[in-house]
Image 1 (cartoon, rainbow, N blue to C red):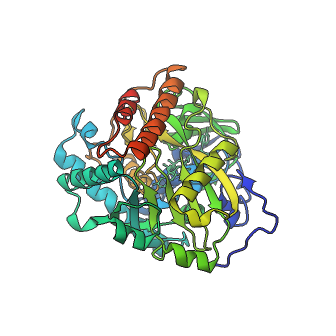
Image 2: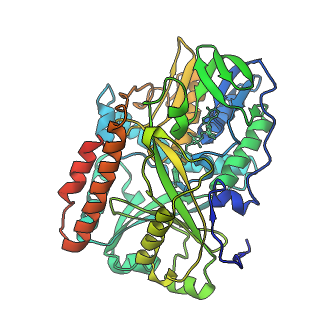
Image 3: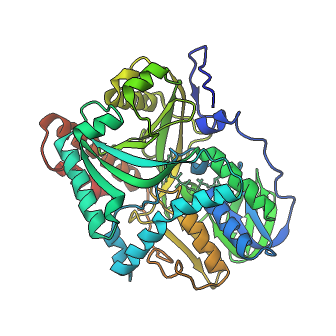
Length: 470
Ligand SMILES: Cc1cc2nc3c(=O)[nH]c(=O)nc-3n(C[C@H](O)[C@H](O)[C@H](O)COP(=O)(O)OP(=O)(O)OC[C@H]3O[C@@H](n4cnc5c(N)ncnc54)[C@H](O)[C@@H]3O)c2cc1C
């Protein structure tokens, strides 16, 4: 792909995401719901979760009538805005799944199946002719302080203890880590093999087209106002269906009755101008690795096919009352903070213009554990709460939802995340205070670990974890 630097130095803020801009801007909308209708399965939200559910339903039962109802357009949410990390990973708190009936073997089976989703996504993309900008690579998490290195070591040890294959993870020293990507002050890194980098908007749009080819109707520009057994009420009419799947992740608090189900955590990203070839020579990054760091306010980055760096991090973590952004626009302070992180890790990029900034929301359950489920009596199902690891998890969730709707007993339907019901988040202002308190403590912990260079994690970070039940 050719790089097109912007001549005017102007930065686009919002416009959903850089990924859509790279495709020529947000796509023309499909038609809205034409009025009252009846289908077998109604899916609310056309992001990865809803689309994967439709894909697997129609792959197994092609005669089903499936409709997706989407407020904006397919991929408008986190699915078309994310960092493009397709890792097959999972939120790390494995012990939580043991409470409430899960077994150790069950958690290990869940992780094994989730790792396999990276291959599965690649397989479907190839079979359906989807150009999702997929590149198989490694994920490299950098440590720039002794405490960060200790955390990576502990993460590796815990993962091995829980059955993650030895050949998937490697802890490397500073010299080897710096040879991959010249991260300033790298003391080492955790390398994870078997992951993939994607261009999220291309993948989600390609998946939407594949789902349509299999017979699903996607009604865009249609807002769901209420989900009840047997019916979905929208601003364009009512959809009656035996099964209804809620696939709205970070937007779920906007639905009636779900204000405290999941917390919409905000994440923001910036895209640089294309780097000159000489700068890439200095930096390395020739394997297009997913690059992150082990700070508490961690960042995640990728090298794009057109030679830019896209880097993301927390920004303003949470808006009062679970509000969400309008069109992905983010605050100037967040852009400055992300730029500062990039310049700290890669000082060579100091004068590089930032061409696009945007943000989005991801869903966080009160116990930070993703779930998928279906109530057989009401016929209402859901999936989400992936805590920022949703690109691959949503594939497995969609596949599991299809099994549950079709009443099939599979290797997926007995896993410990199926039909879990975490408790609700606290009402405001407690939610706002807790989340903002947590991120202030993480920032203070990062500063302390950088300045004092202890060999263990700061107690402030542990306090932050406890504050939000992480
Ligand atoms: C900035 C950012 C970076 C991320 N980076 C990564 C990453 O690199 N790797 C990773 O694994 N995960 C990442 N994630 C998380 C991941 O993108 C999400 O978990 C995943 O895309 C969720 O998919 P989804 O389909 O469940 O939700 P979404 O993609 O958010 O889709 C929900 C859809 O529901 C629609 N909707 C909402 N309310 C209504 C309504 N009332 N009526 C009708 N439709 C409605 C929305 O318009 C939206 O299209 C990131 C998230 C963000 C925000």
